Image (cartoon, rainbow, N blue to C red; front, side):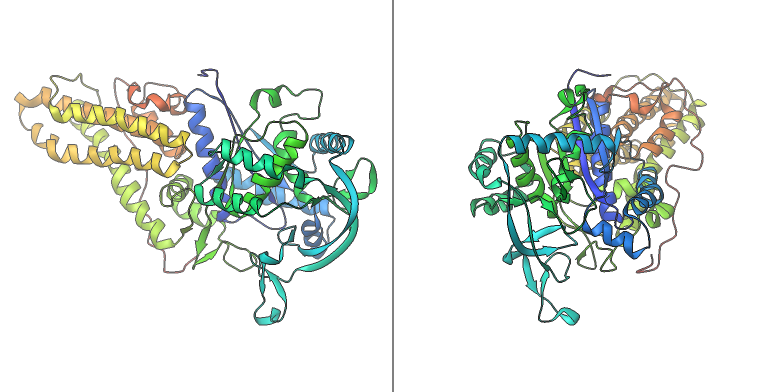
Length: 525
């Protein structure tokens, strides 16, 4: 199905200091929706995700649980992070761990090049360090502590005291790249999205860049520097390189790297500086192309606060999928929130959208159309007769929303793509109400008209389902088995969704696509 173009997309690699919450899941499903869409439009597509397993935070988590860091990482990956992908139906092409040998090999090659080219030097450093962020903090990043931390400076993100660290280590000459970065942002306005994140990054860089401390000597859980085995690489410098080491950078087989790099990075906005400042500067120093785009999506808020396990506001994804299913999880988080802005999650909101838009909207539409074809035509899909303006309007809308949805996905706006497809759901429900096929069925003289109406509705339903398939793969595959002309719905061209081919007969849709779910109690988990 490939048209010859490529599309590679990545999520951040996530810390294995704890189990994932729905903030992590949001990033995963957004990247997966974009990847599935590109696969279905014929692009050579690659989706990478993985885990970040080095650094002081992981070491402390392991010690607190009486394990070695590797034992802790292995346990979390196998019991929490890989199962998350199955829970959410994420169809990733690769999963990288920073403890992989391939990653260490690529990191070592990259580091050695920067060292040989004079971009790394030795020096002394003292600064405020947040273990939660694994980052040295500027004074402007700190706030006055409250409660048990009153009188101390705490990280504005994690609300925990920073540590004053002083050590001799190695520095990356990041200050050399200030103007080159500003030139990049100006020449390629799409490099950082959305606009709010772009503006924040430009302001940060414009204030001046300092050289970056890239090694640690106070602990040993990390990749050793190839020229100084007394130092381990700073965890962020290590982690960012996963995007190219997974593609074979630094190995004898770098075909995937040459074919698929640069990638689109989908990240949370809180780590935009790492991806839009440090990372492109690193790549410039190594003469490697910068990423295609960096998109910093908004935070998921619960009770007005960002998702955080440490603050007790983390919700485990399975709590939602066990109640509403993985398709509803994926649909809700990509439909309800503007991609790029913060969004507030509530059980009431997801329940309301599930019943209004999926059960009563899309699911009921599918059930009605199939049931009427079975009742009035024994499941056969009749040929259409003369078309009225109402019929033509549905056909034209199907083509129009397909184009709008595709444009939205290419612009990394999944919420707009879903909204475009749902416009057709609403139009089809209105069309059926207006045409009243149950009335037409009572008049033998209107049989051709009845067939035209139901087949027009079925054609629209198929278009909606192809458009929905990258975001709701299970439900749409179930529906495809009832209405499609064989194969998998994932094989249908999403950018030409209105051209899908129906089966000659439809089969019953057992149990409906989205059965009603009991309303959860307010605040229930």
